[in-house]
Image (cartoon, rainbow, N blue to C red):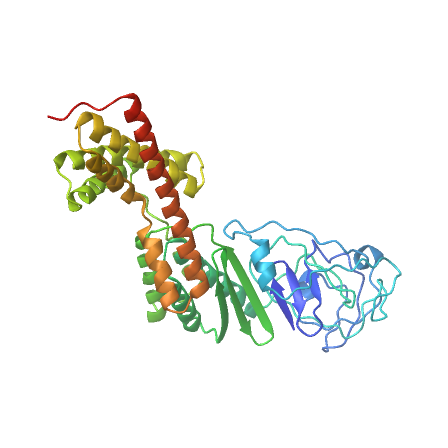
Length: 414
């Protein structure tokens, strides 16, 4: 049996990894009767689910020991490191040349009889160089067509399940909800054997059906927060469970149609600034402190969106935004409203509270409590890095204010 890892086929019995090549149409006529099938000059589309027994292959194919990188699917983010770590494919490459003999006694120009292989599909190309060990004896096939309806169906199921998990993770769903939704949809689609692995970098879905195995990997670039997308993805899952959606292509299109709805940045700036003023009021601030926090919040959110648009790292963006917003609030409280030092600190701190990543912290603790410790620790680590970045910006504001007040003393309070 062979497993399909991205662009490679792997034999579970021998460990042989067979990569996809551009075409096998130039192979000579191959006569074999291992399955009762006479193969006369079959092409790549006829190379599946057959036992191979025939004359030696041409040297330009048999001696090829470099692996070709194929273009990735536009909707499938490739992460070679994560998938390579999860697969069982060998890591070393046999440098055997033409006419040489490998460890099993097979020459590079010979394919042993009975080395049958069954193609299985994954639905996404994976541009990672997979090599074979010295004991392996197989030829490369750069591209294998999916003639069997079972193969196409299994590949499509793996693809839509991975897409579902990828969308939910990118929208901020907790790990238990992602795992439950993917496995529930797999059951609704008739899959009896499914393995799923979710990490910070990506999601891997592996389906089995008889001798066919399909593996799909999708990279998760970031964990955003969009509960509207999570809700609509759950609606798709309910439609599949209730039977309203049965066609696999339509299910995949319905999942991919769930796009995050972005709010207007100007509206968000105003709303976040009002939230900063409310934080100040809840902590005992008066009207002057709330106004200072409001002005600081406007500058903070504007700086944050500007730095994100320019492509700064998220932690660095938090640091700069916290410094900009808290310094603005402190300057307003000190020189416009002439407040006391403790009130100035309150206005600056209330502004910085807008950057606390509350949702990632909650999801991280929920994942740990529900048994998903690795991904939960990852979420908490990322959230703590953001909190520390915002704290650095606030501390920088305090030192900056001390320096400014030493140069420009505040007005005396009456």
